[in-house]
Each structure stands twice: as structure tokens, then as C-alpha cells.
Image (cartoon, rainbow, N blue to C red; front, side, top):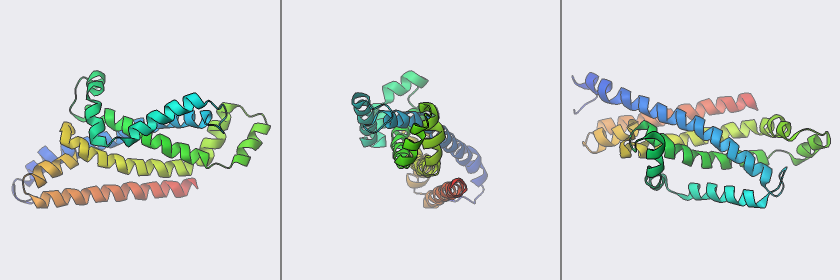
Length: 223
């Protein structure tokens, strides 16, 4: 196949590109959702247990923060290989979309946790103290005050994380997860078909711009 527009282009789109788009969307959406849920939980634990938190506990804070920093320090491709035994235990295989979601979620959770923690720490301390003086419960303080005030910044951080996750899919694709990144490498670069490679690169740029534009819109609405 030398062109996207020759007689074989329909088969190329049907057999290669559409499944690649589907795999990419599955990885990005699942990882963003799971990473945000786990990252939020971790961020709340860090917020509560830090030295200025609601219930300071230096041991829990240090352990959780250490684990988060360790995960963040791993290059994603190395983390994927390192987590292969865990991935196979959880999903029964070490290749494919489901297998890629495991290390992607772990990596994204650590990244998102720090973003959310930083966003929550930016909330006005005087507001938090004022709410405490009214006798507000810890749960409501976190959900109704801190998270509510930090929501625009958190959304901005999640959008940034989603763009990074899209980049993860290209790396995951080289290890059997599929996706448009894998299609660019396999059917573009390795096949010396630069038209395909540049086209997919353009599609990735469009995806990133689309995610960022949507994120900016939501951010403005939440401000």
C-alpha cells in the first residue's frame, strides 16, 4: 500500500485505521477515568495527612508520597515491562488494550494525584480555617469546600494528564496494544510509507488540540 487514496484505501481504513482509533479511544478514556478516580483518592490521602492537613500523619504521608514519586520517576516503557507480571495476573494477558490499561492507569494515577494535590493546596487557607470554625465535618470540608474551590484547576490538570495519556498509547502500541501510534510505526515508518506516518501524526495533533480546546471550554465554564 503506497497511498491512502488508492484502490486498497478502503480496506486499509476498515482493517487498520478504524480498529486503531477504537483501541486508542478505549485506552485514553478508560485510563483517564480510572486514573482520575485513583489519583483523587491518593491526593485526598496526601492532603489529609500532610503536616498542615486535617489529620497530619507523617508516616502515612511519607509512604504514599514515596510510592507516588517512585511511579512518576519510571519512564513509561520501563514501567510497562516492570508491571508485566501484575498485568498478566489482573487481566490474564500481557498484550492488548486491557493489558496496556493496567500500567497506563498506574502511571496516570500517580501523575494525576500530584496535580490534584497541588490544586487542592492552592485553596485559600483562610477559607478552610473559617469553615473549620463553623464546625464543618471533615468530609464536607473536603468535598464541599476544598474540592469545589479547586475544581477548575483540577480540570485543567486532568486535561494535561489526558494529553500525556494519549502519548502513552503510542508507547503501549509498540508492545502489542494497537492504537494509532502503533499503526503509524508499523504501517508508516517501518513500511517506509511516510504518507501514512505523517497523516497519523496529523490526526494525533488534531486529537491533542481537540482535547485542549474542550478542556479550556470546561475550565472557563467552571471559573
